[in-house]
Image (tube, rainbow, N blue to C red; front, side, top):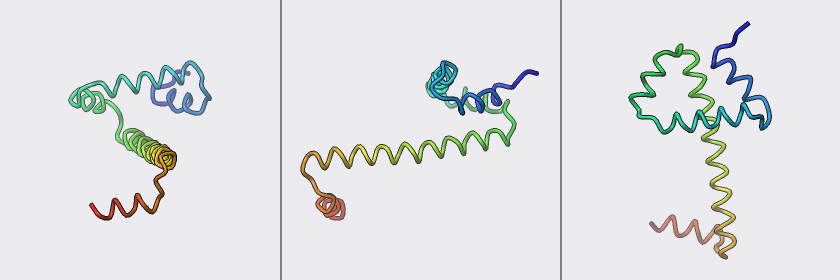
Length: 94
């Protein structure tokens, strides 16, 4: 029984830091370096329901990563002695 690349990616995603997962991450990183035209051309070969699932998964990761970035920024600001209230006042004055 052979698996499609998409099915294999879903299985590998569930594994911990395996070599396959690392390679899949590198593949996604390389995909991000491609032109929009090339990505669209390749995406046309993927069934629509799979594209929707891929987009949904990426949106979830984006939201998670955004939270991580906010946390890192909050830590950096706190380390510099800036309070949340001071930051809020600054942002509201802009």
